[in-house]
Amino acid sequence: MFDHIEPAPRDPILGLSESFREDPNPKKINLSVGVYQDATGKTPILESVRQAGKLVLERQKSMSYLPIPGSPAYASAVQRLMFGDGHEAVTSNRAATSHTPGGTGALRVAGDLIHQQFPKATVWFTQPTWPNHPQIFAAAGVPTKSFPYFDAKTNRLAFGEALAAIEKMPAGDVILLHGCCHNPTGIDPTPDEWKKLADAVYGRGLLPLLDFAYQGFADGILEDASGLLAFARPGAELMVCSSFSKNFGLYCERVGALTIVAKDQKAADTVQSQVKAVIRANYSNPPAHGAELVTTVLSDAELRKQWEKEVAQMRDRINGMRELLVKTLQAKGVPGDYSFITRQRGMFSFSGLTPPQVEALRKKYAIYIVGSGRINVAGITEQNVGPLCEAIAEVVK
Image (cartoon, rainbow, N blue to C red; front, side, top):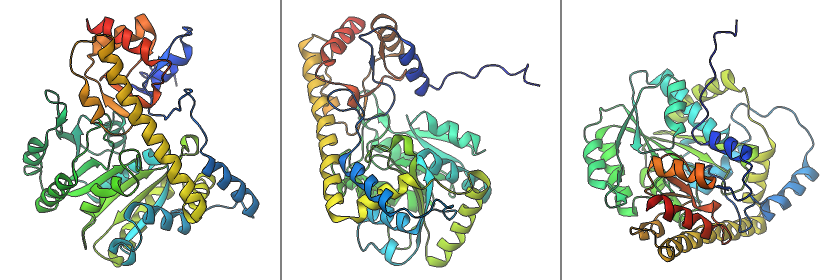
């Protein structure tokens, strides 16, 4: 029965990590997969998370199933983190949150919900977007299209083109936006641009879906929610897919959430019942441990303070590597102006490297970068930035 099955192509991002692990070159550098690394090239366990883990083990009394949408305490903590204390969407009980296996799980649940409840809807992606977005929604049976977002000539947001495209989208469609730290470009709208985008989206009768995977990695915990808050207007509808892989370092725990914000509590309860049906048919209910870690950190004043400090340290290191990368590229004589890299936010930079240059970096220098030229800046260290920029200089020249 299996003889006719052909091997699937490797994932464009995770497949590179597989190739990296198999590469015997001792000087190899991995700038592909979106995982934070510290100055030594390791992915650390945050001390706030380590302390929370001890508390969770001490307090745990059962390993029974969680409810289908997960722990109510986790849902409350997620909402407070995203919207802030006392936000109308939370106090009016028109926000309903479900714990999902990572942000990817949240996107898939959202995709299944859209397929079932909005069968005529198309999901619109920014061009470019995270490479896994199209796969997730295709697997859910949802048609997708793209709209302009990135101006390659100026390395800036194509804001006018994006607004013009939104004005032509059919009412009832879904538009997927990156809440902050756009992946792969690192380019986010300003607070004023977020407001104008929200005006256009709601004016056109679209449903916004925010992929909010990097809160705290751009400018700050509260600052990074400016896009979300621009859409979270009284009575407005939206969906948010959040993740705690990056800002809590909980990559292997797969901790995410899907939050539905409806016009009122009754509508939120109704939509949540359909979300629960989707989850039940998919993974039934979520794993507990990672969500307990998040809930414990966010609910303990001292741990929350320590966690925010650690997030700031990660953010500062990434921004520092951006500046160091630009200075080293200049010092190594790489042709072109790369100052735009310091304006980008989050772990990723759309470097401008072409697919042939990316291939040459991999084959000649064992430097692994996504084919689009996206670089994980968090994978750069003071030790590897020199060899990296020397190699870039060679392939660009």
